[in-house]
Image 1 (cartoon, one colour):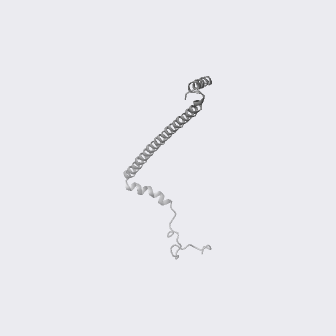
Image 2: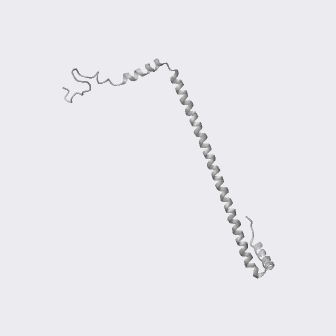
Image 3: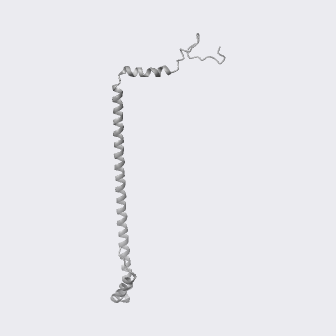
Length: 130
């Protein structure tokens, strides 16, 4: 903004008093004050609008960056998934069956293998053991 020192302000007031006279000076001062107020409000409005536009642009930039990161992550996941599918497709079916054998051996025996003679399948023995 314009900087006016106290000395310049006094000089301006004296010139205005001499040029306008004591009758018109109060009206001119009110008019000048109103004009300055309008200019300040207009300037504040423009400044606020520019700040809002900058914020909107910043939000848009952040959204574009987030979308790019999401697309990169999706591409990486797709590549990993394709690589895993290709790896599984390259393994012969026989090797898959053999790799399951230790897992099957580690499973507990089924109920039919642990049945006592003469008991119906699925029936537990009573707590007495008889």
